[in-house]
Picture 1 (cartoon, rainbow, N blue to C red):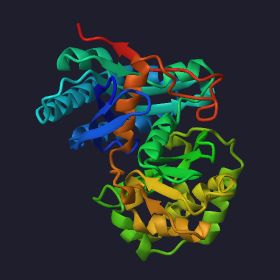
Picture 2: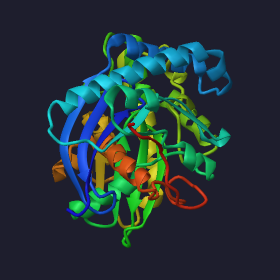
Picture 3: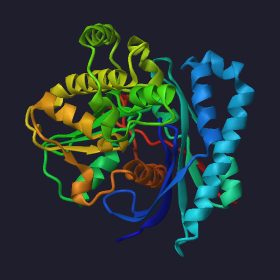
Length: 367
């Protein structure tokens, strides 16, 4: 590898369950090597505070000020947790880490208003870890007319190149929200959020049991889809303006209120996969047989089966290509940190809708 940087990526997704941490080595362009991947689960108090604060804010920017004290306190606690994760993973390597790519915890994403908020104090993290921190990756894209997401397509293309994956290629990342990257025969990137991922199912399970998610879709598998309320909910969603990016609060599970936990899980799984598959159709022309699934949702076997039935084609898990699907995004933000430091673009008109390709990420140098 030519000039390479060691970068530690930190990712806490919309599920709000913990922090994925990855150390990579990369030149920020075509070369990349995965070194260490670790997961650090939030303690119950932080996780609950994230859920509670999201519910209070309701994806309403005005309420960020109303609950500013709670926002500041949670941001501090989340940053300290990330710092502890950094110090733990650094014990496993002798490499001198050049950068920390710090995504933070999203509590609001309202791209049509040009606003997004990830909790994470880059200066505090740099002070604690004594490392150069690059964070706040989405703001520059918003300033340049984009929606601030998705930001991972440039890394998906790097994975495709490294692992010599066949084109055209669809990479579907099922987290709290689901985003899609499409690489055409010329390796050109296109991307957008295509709907909910785990968010509605997880929320339903949390509200109706002591569990935090539907393990492998076993609960949904026992239930029956309530088609009447499902069809009405799908029609209601179809009337909404389509975005290139979504927040979990753009989706509502109230239409399954009163159902058994099994029937609710089954109906929400069907609702989720129907929206995803409808929004994927535009990319299917030549790539229906080359679809990779990454993110936590790939472990929900019932959900994956539902997708396969709707598109009438099997899908592949990204793990089948010796890529750990749990850490694609944390590795991506390690890579984006390097690109941001080098002032290389991380978002593009075809991915976020920005006016022109632009870099992003605020650099806090370790003094």
